[in-house]
Image (tube, rainbow over all chains, first blue to last red; front, side, top):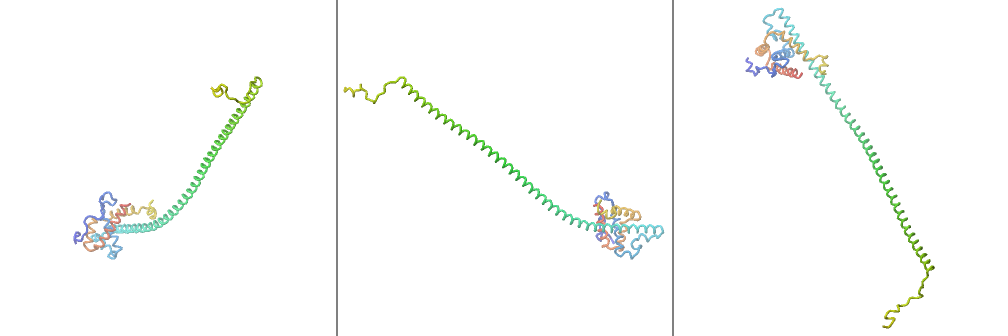
Length: 212
Length: 67
């Protein structure tokens, strides 16, 4: 049986590209051999005995080789157990991660809702504070406007009062002047009287009067 | 620590397997490729069993490389 005829790749299929960088290095055929031996127990090879599975043991059945094969057998069993442990651990870890993810989802949702509530409460408090501050500012501005108008009103009242006082003074002064003039004229008339015509006559020297 | 390792009593299972693998190699005398080819040629293992072993080896290598 030629390996190439059966489509079996001659290059180790599990060989990594950079084999030297892998911890197994270029031990791909070792791993395949190992899994063939591991698969033997699970697939009925065990019934054929060691001679069937380990043909290299048939050549010389010396005692020291017997011990070596026994040790080899124990190593394979240990490897098989290790792989089963890993598989079980991965399965358990998968369940645990599933549970953790579900719990994490619930916690995230709860945290989101709590955060929304906190934000809403803080937003309401902030709005109330802003409204209060705005109202205080408006009240202050309104009071300043009222004070300003009061001051203007007082100034206007003072101006009106001054205008009224000035007008009263002018009237009073005019009245005093007129009275003073009349009294002066009366005194002059009494001290140095001059004739006062009883009635008014025409000019006697005009042409109409002379007939010329 | 990786919770997977914690579930394995705090031991790194990959390292343990590598250690056992090295012991297996040291105990085994001969060319593994030749042995596999002989088993396949003689009919001790079938093509399907060989392919299965290759697939498992690939999975193991992927596991090791992700470590």
